[in-house]
Image (tube, rainbow, N blue to C red; front, side):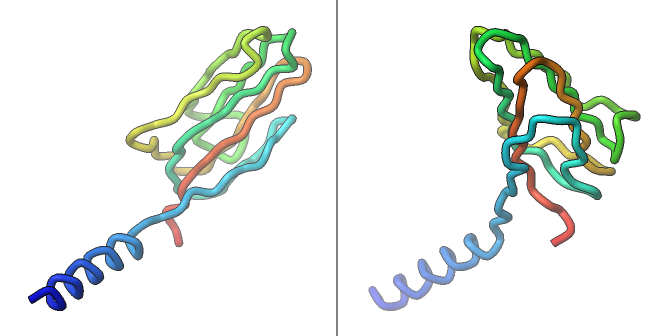
Length: 116
């Protein structure tokens, strides 16, 4: 009986690991950039300031700085960093394009590809 339970547990654990989609990171970016082309889910964004100047990032559901704005967030310079993580990831249908503004501003985006 213990062997059967161990086998069932192992199969259940293996199936859950195989169903897991890892997130990918943009790496720290300091300029406007196309992060990903195609359908994906955004899981989080970290916005980093230079400690003095405000940093603002706008995310477009597109491959350029036009179309649907899915996020616009400003972090106050003295806060050093801020951002957001989604418990239920937000879907981007066409791609992720990031527009960053602010002296010394940077950002990191985490996302899950839907076209494995």
